[in-house]
Image (tube, rainbow, N blue to C red; front, side, top):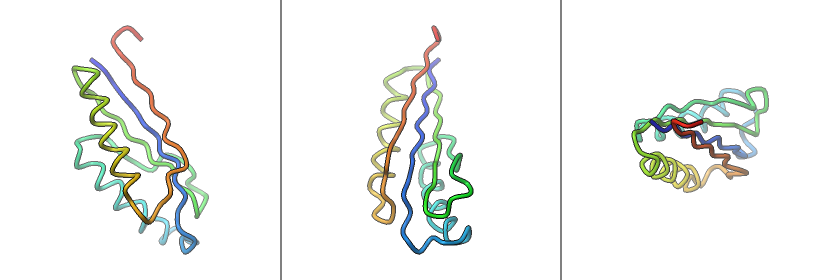
Length: 97
């Protein structure tokens, strides 16, 4: 069994100066990520209006499948024109960890 995680640090547009506006950017991204059958949620920068951290986790029998799913998630988030990806921190854990 292998688990993989990625945490995206996102810069939101300048008009996200309220939690409602911030949610309007974060919720569609989280919903789109969940189509890959992963767990996804806003996990950090909860009190900052112009920033968001979205975490993704996946579990699979093979490490290659975990990498493929995380690659797809990264492409999806990077392809969103309304946000800028500041960083994507990835971790992969195997049965020996």
